Amino acid sequence: MMIHSYDFKNRDEYRAGFNRLSKLVFGLDFEAWYQKGAWDDRYICHSIVANDEIIANVSVSKMDVVINGEIKRALQIGTVLTHPEHRGKGLSKQLMEYVLETYGDTCDLFFLFANSSVLDFYPKFGFTILPEHQFHLNLTVQLQEQPMLLDKLDVSKEEHWDFIKQKLRSRRPISEHFGVYNVPGLFQFYALNVFPECLYYSRTDDAIIVLEHEGDLLHVYDVISDKEVNLETLVSRIATEQTRKVRFHFTPDQLLNKVYVEPMGKHEDVLFVRPLSDLGELPVFCVPTLAHA
Image (tube, rainbow, N blue to C red; front, side, top):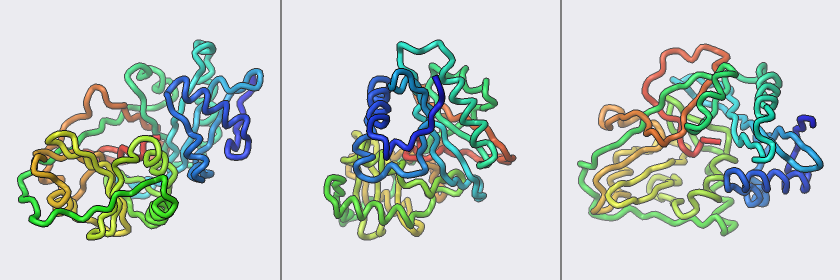
């Protein structure tokens, strides 16, 4: 068995095998993402193949991040998969070592997210847990008398999809504490597979807003714009009469003196970082949810 780095965009049989494994292990299918042209050269699969079938995979997503106002070249490791029948053979270890050696000279840091079942695995490769926080705002502002004019975006409509791609090309990072940019494919994956019903366009802000109401809690997942959007004003216009609290799924730089901050919940994925340069002293932050590979 050998490690292969495939351009799955051009190898239908291997892309199909990758999708079979991903659906088996994570319940995820990348085919619609590919068909929409969102699987670009910044997402690269590294797989182990046996009998023409992909049995293990580690992918990398190339991206630029801004941390404490400084731009870093980063590689996020994700889609770490091993077929259940081939676990315990060290295949993920082999792939991780290959990826770290192959890309070590090309970036300033590696990072990844892990669930509680594999927290002992990544420190073996020099990764360290970096604590994240969550940010909530108690809604004390008065709701705008005129409700916000939001246009629902439909990813199945070609003109809406093209509009989303256009906005992603010129977006600014959502945070200077920890922001991500130059990786439109990740957002497009979430738009297609996770939040297709949560995408709106605010004409007032000329911004795409990813939001979801859950009872009296308003989730704000992302704000895509080429300029800074006033978050407090935005919230006052997208909240409903039932809304009592807002959770920002990114670091709301503008509101850090107004939000209350808590450690990430026990069921949230854990951020691991392997810095190849000094990250310095970090403020409280969270990596934007829609930047998780």
